[in-house]
Length: 156
Image (cartoon, rainbow, N blue to C red; front, side, top):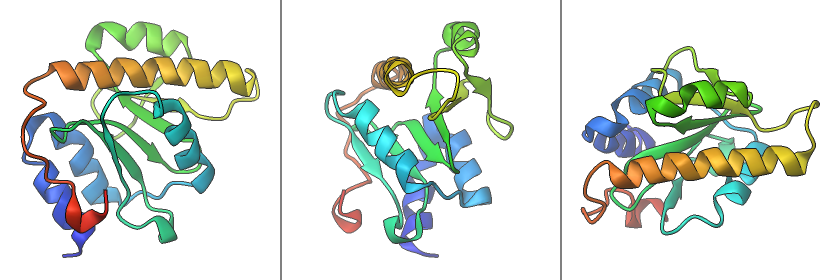
């Protein structure tokens, strides 16, 4: 088992992360560097959080986690950003271009980071909004003062 699987296997211990961790372990998704850069841009104004990529050189997925290791966002593939949203936000997220993501429960909503029907600025504003909502949900769903499992060995 490599360090990436080791980290995900520790993160899966938190019930909040179970679905996304199982997806990652089963699919080993990649993420285009433009997509991970976009995720960095839209999350830049969030309070304390971490990003984790098991292998940036091989364009592996990226996840965003709270300080207590609750995963609230992920970058997968060429253009998909995933956000763990409250159930009451699902309909509005879909109206704004979000979609259910096939292998994850409905609280994980996928958005295309790059759209031809919307300017980059407008889309980035929308994505920043959904990222913020996902962060708030994760921060409110329990104690965010727990010791982190993502840290020194991962360079995060």
